[in-house]
Amino acid sequence: MTTDLSDITRGLQRMRELVMQGGAEGLTEGAQAMQADAQVTALYQGVTGATRAGTVAYVAGAGAPGSGALDAAAAAVRELNPDHVLVQVVEAIGPDETAVVLTVPTDYIADLVTKNAGAQDFLGPTLTAHAMRLTAAAAKGIAGKLR
Image (cartoon, rainbow, N blue to C red; front, top):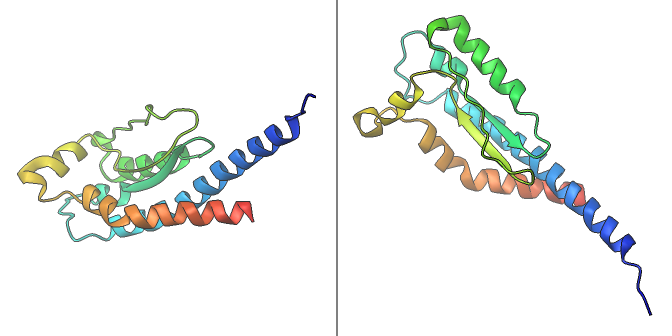
C-alpha cells in the first residue's frame, strides 16, 4: 500500500512559510523598538548628529525588506555628514535565515564603538538589552500567523 504524502508536504511547506513571515513581522516590530532606544542613548557624543540620525535597526534575510530602512539611514547621514557615508550590506545570511541588524551607515562607526575600550559603544549594549525582547517578538509574530 502506498501513502500519498503530498497534502502533508504542502501543509508543512505552508507552515514553514507562515513561520518565516510571522518571525520577520515580529522581528520588524522588535527592531523598530530597538532602533528607537538606540537613537536616544546618552552615549552619543557626536558633532553633526549624523550618527544618531543614521542609527537603524532592520530585519534582513528571508522575505524581509530591510534595504529601504538602510537606504533611509544612509540618506540621513548623507544630509548631515556627506563625506562619511558608508553602506555595507549584510551578505552572510542564508536563504532560510533572518537576522536583525543594528548599525549606522558611516565610515567611522567601527572606530566609535571600539575606541577607548568601547566607552562610546551603543550598538552592543542596545542589542544585548533587546535580545530577549526580539526573541519574544519573533515568537509572537509566529504565533499570530499560526492561529
